[in-house]
Length: 172
Image (cartoon, rainbow, N blue to C red; front, side, top):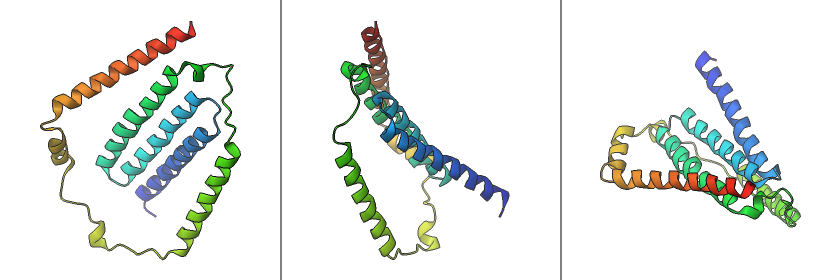
């Protein structure tokens, strides 16, 4: 096996541990804020998968939308909900057994489907990369929408700073 494939395999294993470890941390962590941070770690592992697959655009979208927007909004919600950050409040969910049984049922159904279905193999031509470059895609996406895009990013930054200030005020 060539050295570059060995390196890719090792990076894949590291990303797998990172993604699955983050996902496990989301489920196991008793602190909601820590669960949100583990979610960011899991999303970052998925970004690494896209980079390994040479899907730069999907990696950028995963980074910007999931880590940059959704995970940050979850962190905003956690920090702005004052009762959830209280150490004395119980973080235990009373319906964990039902949720575990539903998750196990879904896992069994998916495993049976994956085992029983005969998956088609794609041809080399279907797997070839398209002729559109990332720079062309960026020019199409951000050409006429540069100003609204920048205004949205500044608005998110201001919201983040406001959430940090409000969270610090509740601590004192």
